Length: 229
Image (cartoon, rainbow, N blue to C red; front, side, top):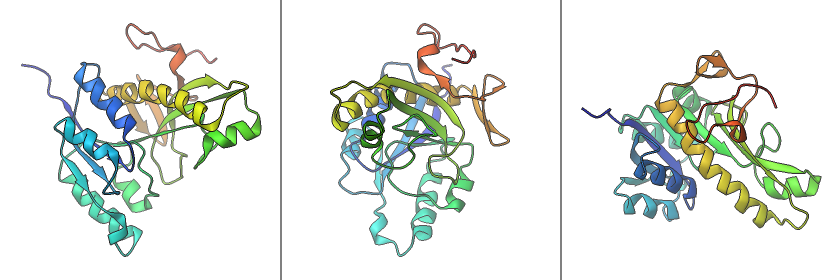
């Protein structure tokens, strides 16, 4: 019998390009998960149509209809848990989550952020990188904790900043890397290779003192060099 697919739920707020990367990875067989639902806090998020086109249940929970952040998070938790996922994947979900919500999913919720964390948490990362004159930028996958963009780092991909870059051109190249590393990290979790233990990310039984670098991965088998760059 085929191996059962690992159940996940994806949360979005916008276009859902990382959601599409996950869907595409499932379709081509690189990602052995079942996306049981896509949930958006914005009714008109483009990503909802991506889910429907893929035959995935698309749910809306409009945060503006709730009297408090805690009330929204409680309703969101109830909705998510109804699909019985083993992992919650934040894919451009633009909401600050309450400590209670984060604690409920601690160790089984991932996020991707468009910077080389811990640098540039929060918004407008591409503009801030250019304003600072940085030579490299990138994206980071991390476990979600109560600290904004501050959970244990798992995997990063880097891009060189070009002299003629604008925030839009830089964002486009970073997004290409996001689409590579996010399905990979989700697959690692589904395979049991990735865990959160004692406030640290662990990969293949070893604590990650530094995030893994996508450039160090073997293209053929996704094995990782643990040597520090």
